[in-house]
Image 1 (cartoon, rainbow, N blue to C red):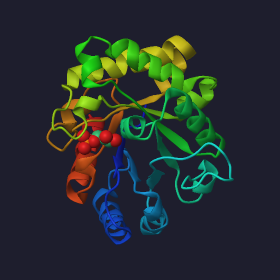
Image 2: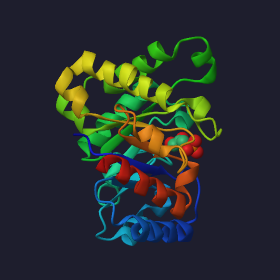
Image 3: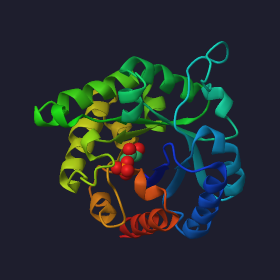
Image 4: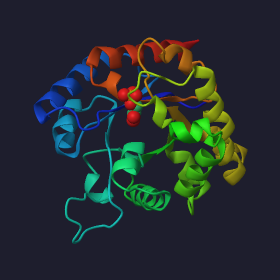
Amino acid sequence: MRKPMMAGNWKMNKTVAEATALAGQIVELTSGYTNVDRVICPTFISLSAVKAAVGSAPIGVGAQNCYWEESGAFTGEVAAAMLAGLAEYVIIGHSERRQFFGETDETVNKKTKAALTAGLTPIVCIGESLAQNEAGETQSFVSGQVRGALEGLSGEQVQSLVLAYEPIWAIGTGLAATSQQAGDICGGVVRATVRELYGEAVAEATRVLYGGSTKPGNIAEIMQQPDIDGALIGGAALDGKSYGEMVRITSEVYQK
Ligand code: 13P
């Protein structure tokens, strides 16, 4: 049984003070829902304050990126190992990083390996563009991204990480994939690719999240899809109440 996860990707939002306040609010609003893994991912500069605000509450903290080298002349980068103690998770290969910062399947793979070596849980993002979707290339493209990200990893490593399917056309647009569409890709492409590469046991153990315009109003339906194990939430995670509501609803869906 895969434990559901609600992960908030705060992207480039919130000052340190705002992030600290939001983390405190989330601790308060979600503490009762222990059957859901809660993860919040602020900017690098807020990690320390958010970690302190979370304190001993069972809420994971994640970074939004890391670099694969351990140290050295890489101005502006942060090594995976440097996140130890500040974060337990790290988002890798978000489509915004692939689109705006030149990340490729190869760099995503290097970062994933570095994160695992540093003892972090990578949340590895994959997803097709609108043009690819309309051209009927979703399946081959997303499967290729999964293969690229996981290249050289053991089955044990793969089942310890989290995959997040985020169709680019659904991110920040208000146009969520239908729960059926999202479930079909998470199961029929993402998990199916893991199954092909690593076998049934690893595929069944690996968590696959959906991301793209998730909100309190559509999360129940999305979480009812058997192959969707949670959500990577953007906009709706910036508001403590709406994030808390999504955790509450997920907790209920999973109690049934
Ligand atoms: P939205 O929930 O704002 O569409 O963003 C999704 C996302 O990119 C999470 O990583």
